[in-house]
Amino acid sequence: MLLFRSEEHVTAWSEQRGATPGATLTLEQGWRLARAWFHDRLSPEWRRKTPEETEEVFAGTGLTGPFWRLT
Image (cartoon, rainbow, N blue to C red; front, side):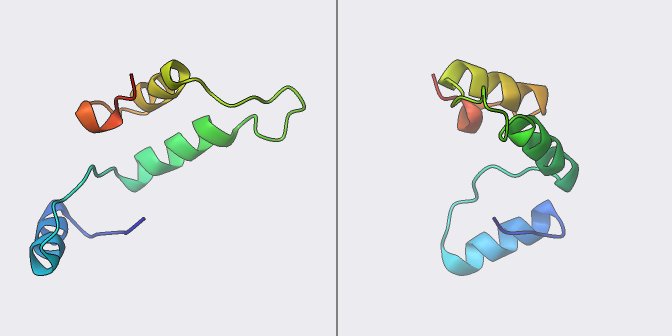
């Protein structure tokens, strides 16, 4: 994970390295994603999320679009 100041910073960083920018998310979205993803990780009933459940977590965090689709 890389942290950037702005979309312009992402673009400049990518161009300098000849890379194609991937998906970006805000720190708030990252925090919400981490909370949604790990909230039950220590539970004895924990199990790996299915691709459909994972997409629901992404969507609930506002992460939508082709990059975030697994199915």
